[in-house]
Length: 157
Length: 241
Image (cartoon, rainbow over all chains, first blue to last red; front, side, top):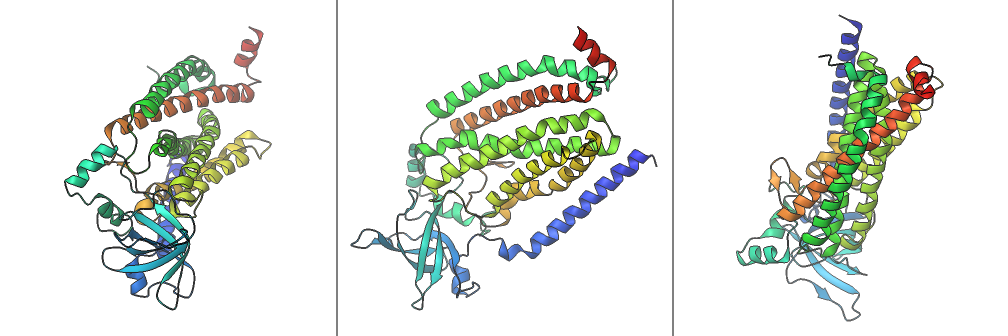
């Protein structure tokens, strides 16, 4: 073998080994790399319930109740199978809406209510003008719900 | 025809000088067209309103940040295997542009994240791996310049760049492999979930970013060539002329 062929083989081999190592490491850390847990995981107690964690899902339609002081809000986060009640005091992001994705950070209290210290809106990958969104809605297309579930939940892909 | 005619620094110096202005001109034209499409023609997004228009900068720069790293790593592979001089110079010339695009992608994303998500920064897999990419660029630049002998710097930095390639699939697939706050890709190999004018504007801006990156790399490689080859006959003749 020419020296340059040897070097090429060494580099290709090294990269392949590195790729395998990275894949194994990432696979081992799979459960630690998730950004949020789903309501089903919380209901099945697959979540460190004694610590802070992030709960992700859709804001269930018709469950958003704003308190008298206008800053406290309660709502339910659902993934279609389970739903977890959440309370939060503070300013909600612009994209916070019923039926849309949300990620809340906090802890489950003794009463089973998730007390959030921070609420983030999760956007989906759809970009369209309002008219197109309206047309989809009238056609009964469950746009937001389906697309959120496709994220990491693995129902769509 | 000699396929390797332009692989010598002395011939490539002239070619780069002739190509670079055209790259910058087409970058300017494409950027003007892309911004016109993005800011004036494209409709408002149904959910986000006007703030979504940051994608016309954010997505092209994020793509370029990954693509340039890949190209840089290819040049680094050539450097290590064939011991060619010009490939190492090209890798050095690309790195600062790549780092710039990575920074702009992170920065614009952060300013988009504040009104839409409600936060500037979260440590989810997509954002963190993109930040690692920025540090890889910094590491490459630092290591390449850390040696007295530039050829040693080339080889050491090339190895670092090749190791960093592992990060590229992690960035790209992070939104599929794990649940992240960052949304999934709107444009992928299977199709798109974007309105067509928005998509056109974004693609035009990507070509503009592409042209700018080529132009910037060519200008930079010319000065690297001159510096490295300053003791050669052709540079001396150039200086005398």
